[in-house]
Image (cartoon, rainbow, N blue to C red):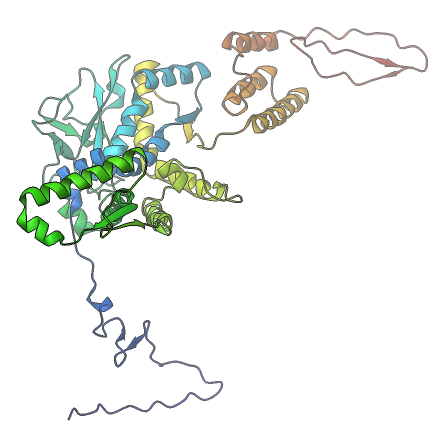
Length: 491
């Protein structure tokens, strides 16, 4: 007989005494009923294993090419991170227009979007800044960039470059421990085989990994498909399986007397049976009749599809949760239900996209804009330069009109109170055009003309004798381009 373990007796704490030294557990287990983790049940046999789908480039590419849901999951967030651009401040409006035009002409946002896509798919990618006449293996020196030297970006995924082992950044800063160089492999198209310094690239990683797992991936991140690989297979399997059930939605069976003997005998008997089946099919196709022998039996079976839509919806919700993309964005469908507008999920999604913009784009994009500014304008960015990512949520016409009215009211009050000059008010109105949809036609010549008018000397005050009993009123604020103050008499 198995010997019972002696049971220890625990004394109950006295009222008011501090409950210290009492042992507790964070899980439930009942070994006699085989409930809980480690109680020799089927649940305890489950475990997580390392599958390393991120290392199998062929699998990832096959999934990206063959499954539309995989393509949507990979492309959605990078496209939303780059589709609105940035709002720059601290620069002359003319320079801002030149920089934005240059970034559009060189397809900067398109290449950044592709870099994000391949980072999501493979676990990492880089965009190399193409600066004419410079050695890519040397550190980037912004003061050596001349006008017209920047030629755009070249996107290379993790399988087109190889960071040399052991050569990492040792200077303190955000790139400490990152690869110092990237060797372009011979299979890469567009750049000659050579070495690229880390300061000349915009690097985007996939999903974050712990230190040792990142080392096993040669310093890159995780493909977005690896954590959701089993859910993708379950969703596609359920979709294809339901599609095949459609062919079996209307099953019909024909019971024939002595069918085994007819098949075994063959010859005229089997040929006659086949001719009879063809006659049945012909009659059903034309008139819907079923012609059988009196001893034969014909039955039709219907298949029900109730509950399958709920199964697909649950799989879709798991994919949405795994990617962090709302159902309407991931599947391209409007939310179901009369009261479900999807505003809450879209707001959370926009916050997630903005967080990724700040985390992945903030530092490298500042350097990239500086390079574009030196190549386009011919001068570096000012010290007070800043930028913000434009919001993804589109405003309605009513919301834009309300913002425009408030902006005009605030600027007008500031100008009338002599807090800002009229030219500054015109600049503020023009700067608000992306949000209001108005005042974008205010030209730089009009602003310069207003500045010149403000620099004209103010005419001397005209002394006017006041009639008896008249009280002089305070001069009104300047209106239009005139700086003359008018004096009104109140009788």
